[in-house]
Length: 462
Ligand code: BES
Ligand code: ZN
Ligand code: ZN
View (spheres, rainbow, N blue to C red):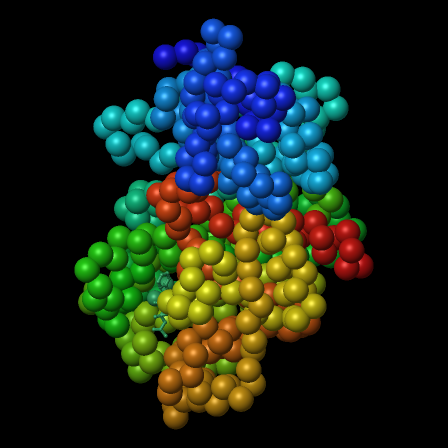
């Protein structure tokens, strides 16, 4: 097969002029396009069927092209940026080029380290004329890299990536970079009451990892807290579904945090962020924490365990309290927290709770960058569902109150300034099916979202 091919859009003059090519164009299917010949040269024609593509549809389109070319084992796809810009003239050029590059790179993503044979090929994107667009290409690449990094972490096996090894993955990634990786010491860990309780059954010691990137000290300090449950069996409240291998992905929130910090640092963004990753394994064993146990947190709030499978909120609570301690002004937590959020919103968008204005802003940011979110309500009337007879609150509702809202209300007990807090429940979007720039693997959700949110807040909110 040929090494290099030219990519043409179906509306390009060359195609329009050529009757023979017009009738080979696929229509109304999900194929990115077709390989054919023109003047003795092999070309790939991308069928564009309308001109109302949103930015994320540009990523999806580019991802489909690169994957399709990869299946044909082509090494390089050459695109004329001017044709791209002409075709999507209604999108601003920097966003268009960055999105196309990002989608192209991610379309070729695969997690193949455990496959004994892998046929897919990475296809280089070559713009034949890069004058004036180099920085946009670079931006697209950085965004794809950060997302791919998050995907890699989430796809890794629960044995390889466990609470004890998680920090090594991050240290390797951030070695020689402008990101500082730190682990809390034993004394500090003993104060992390949620983390220590959830982790009791595991042979892997818990960790609390801090990633610091300060591009500008004068910017408001923002803390990201990412749920880092490297495997969730449910613990004593054991999960009983047939295949729970997807619970290795219960650290997708932590991966989003790591990916966001990577992206911000790579862009040398003028932000001041710290990422917290409480890393634990929630497993069943003779030492596991039990329903009926009571945890008393540093803020003196006591929590009775009703169900050991509602573990995410317990470890996030420690992170939220520590965010207050270090003087965070803005706080975002992100977690694969509840199965209910998937029932509510499906697998295309996460739910966001917290300050209304900031939630709407996050929705806007997600619409542009592809990490879609939908604002959900913190309904005070449901607070009573968290009542416990033996402690200040319980970790699950005592009735049939909606799961995602209950979890968010639980977390709110640990937040200092609720006007500057957002909670993202990404349980529905942690993994994807092959389409556009997504593959059958972790989605890498949240890295771009958190990074763009940090930039927004740093530039506009003060
Ligand atoms: N990690 C799960 C949530 C989850 C479920 C993520 C499916 C991704 C896919 C979480 O720890 C959990 O088990 N939540 C329970 C809470 C319940 C016991 C109150 C849930 O949502 O069922
Ligand atoms: Zn659970
Ligand atoms: Zn969980």
